[in-house]
Image 1: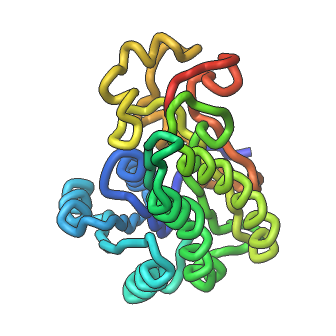
Image 2 (image 1 turned 30 degrees about the vertical axis):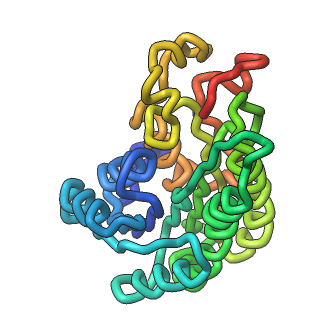
Length: 262
């Protein structure tokens, strides 16, 4: 048994949506460090290109808004101009919306559900052929959906559509996995907990307070999330199908009744 290269991604092609900052950027950095060529996409072109420049020659920017089916198809067409196959797709682009129950607007449902649930499905659909071209039983292609512990347990905030969307994406991961494994494409998800990011302002702005309520007594680091993504993307995770890996320092499984937002 040779385990020395289990986590390497040499020669692999990856695409990460929402890849210009926070979780997407951390995963991109981790993949590049393990030898992958990474395409990152985000809605803001200037930020996307700046991040690609910062991450080096193995990172290429493909700016695109994937909140619509047309945007998903456009991103797939952009990638096809560069690559005939895709080994790893990370569906990370997401949105949240907070408002009181009586005031919560329809747009707060439509925007969040479209980007967090529909887009991972339709982007994967649009990229099915390049994923199949890269896939084999001995080296499956990978689709990794970024979900959240807010899809696994309630938080105290009035983010109705966000929590619902992440629960839906966890289940969609299972449904997609059951179908795509037939094409040697493994679909899984990562459910982050408290990581300091623009999405998780509680962890970003009240880090010590949040950390005190986590069983591990600290916030997650970029390395924690990158490591989990590398595991799923690499040979190390080839036999994981349809599952969600929770990366949260014990919030979901180690702290009954936790009230920390993620």
